[in-house]
Image (cartoon, rainbow, N blue to C red; front, side):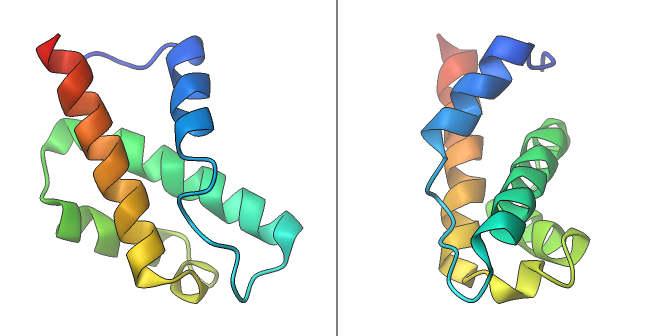
Length: 91
């Protein structure tokens, strides 16, 4: 695997801007949590973990706000990052 360049990270961020819903979290706090979740997702990709394991790690790592995000929304973020990396590596 290769490290993401700054421009790649910006592209990933733009793709997944609304992957996690701000339900139950104030907008300013949510933006911080979403960015942190995205950082963990990208960082954990080199380990090749299943999406469910990555989802649980991301939720735990972003406590106390991680558990306020809907599980489905975190799952969508994790799987989008996982599939985005897979599709870009196969090209």
